[in-house]
Image (tube, rainbow, N blue to C red; front, top):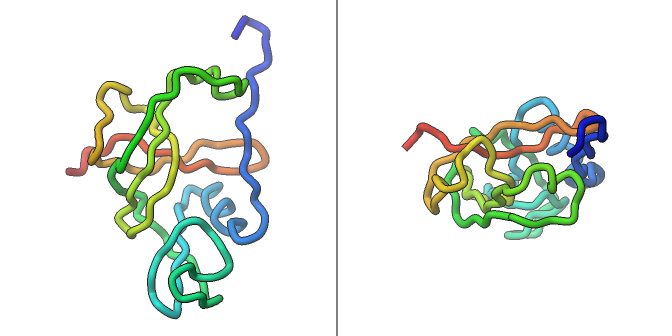
Length: 142
């Protein structure tokens, strides 16, 4: 970016419907995971019915925000104005300790240090409209 250029804003997710509670909690620094009250299984992504048993008795539990990298890639090119200011950056699938896998960015971690199985923990980046974006960084937990 040249001096004086406006920094592009982060793309924001759709905060309506089944994910509304998730994004509201993330804005307050809390990572939520959907959990079925009928079969007691967690799942991802937010939806009004459990994908395991079909129940509409879905609630949310607070995640500890810890997990391990299942897989990742390093993005070195993009046409998106916001993400082009962050090149290169990592996108990863994280296996949360609560048993669900989420896709996110890995931040504040050297790209050459990333590896499958690496322990990570959540942190939240502020986005416009009071939205928090869960990202993960390397954890000291083994």
